[in-house]
Amino acid sequence: SYWDVFQADDEMMKPSSAECSMCKSIMKRVKKTISSNATPDEIKTKLNNACEKIRLLKVQCKHFVQKYLHYLIDELMTDDGPKTICTKIHICKPESPIKEIIFVHDQANDNF
Image 1 (cartoon, rainbow, N blue to C red):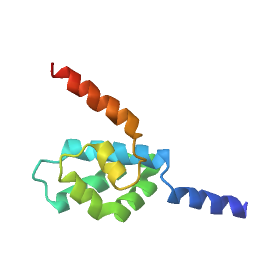
Image 2: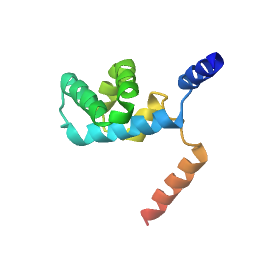
Image 3: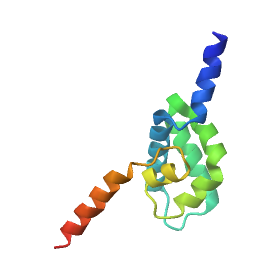
Image 4: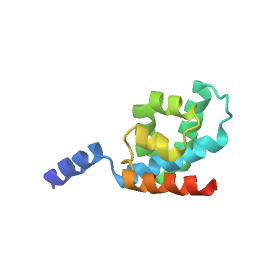
């Protein structure tokens, strides 16, 4: 119905787990294929190529890349991992801080 379309659109404005997964998988693919000194143009090409490979979500992927292109290029030029990148641009919800505290604690123990 008419309202379903509205609701679906509204859902797309909020971080969704589907978009988060898509973001992470694109970042993972692109990270693997770019060199550490990749140019913004190279990164843009790789992002678009990654979308071509996701066939099923190709259209959503291209929208996503266009919308966040500058952020994605900036982030892909850093050492941030896919999850960090997607969280920074608010596609993925941040992990609860409790998990991170435990994680940091575990790492501290490894040093002994």
